[in-house]
Length: 360
Image (cartoon, rainbow, N blue to C red; front, top):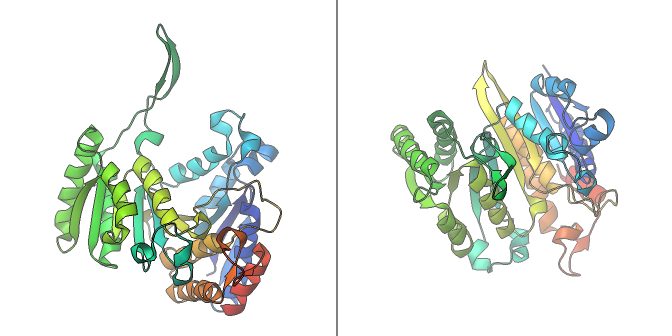
């Protein structure tokens, strides 16, 4: 039976990078992928047409798909739209409704791009970190929240909430990933000042008993941020909550030299033999270059590679995609975001797609 992929290009450069990734899907179908895809709207593009950033119809399509590929959402065009209808609410809705609690964000330095990092070569060469971020709990979803008038002026409230089961399940994802890598997990929180941090550390230590062959290190979030730029290769798998994961994964991303190079996967629990997965690049919608064929499609293409590995059980095709990207970079082809000198060949978004497809 063919795999069903829902493609949600979204806004800005999301449209361009998704189009190039669809071309890769079509190429892989010639090599045994056997996938069908359907495009639909999400984010600002959906709001403009439907008045909602995520419609019930699209959500239903997502639930009936084997995997979801998303381009990017957002842009200044929708800054004045009420929060519940802004483009980002569409993405948050998908994560929440599909229970995509585990966000996997690799920070991988390609050999050909080691000079693109602002850190010294010996600090980042061969860097390969996986950040596992809890995605459906914490301060982004906690209640109560809001802004209210008081006798002392306006007051803003955000609530950080975690249950033990939420911590346990994300810790198990991290330990399982580490078992396939270098057998080390660093659990990151703020147990020194936050009650949720205290519970987080307690639960992770308890869950670790089922993975005693994995080395567990507990680290405060501020120290982790410092260590990422001081000695990032000390890390293998980092597991942390929603807020700290958001911050630390962007920090780790820039160790690699460009947000435009990094993919991500958001996974749910396996139910009845099926696991929902949403795969998207780390970068945003970059409206300043949208429609100009300048975007870097590699992060979205590598997000497809993660889909092949984690959802569609096609690791050999995933390797083909990753090897093609490595080859293109080693040959000196660059989009504008990673172009550094005249010894390289500057190419457009669509040309980068051509080159990768030729080498798959």
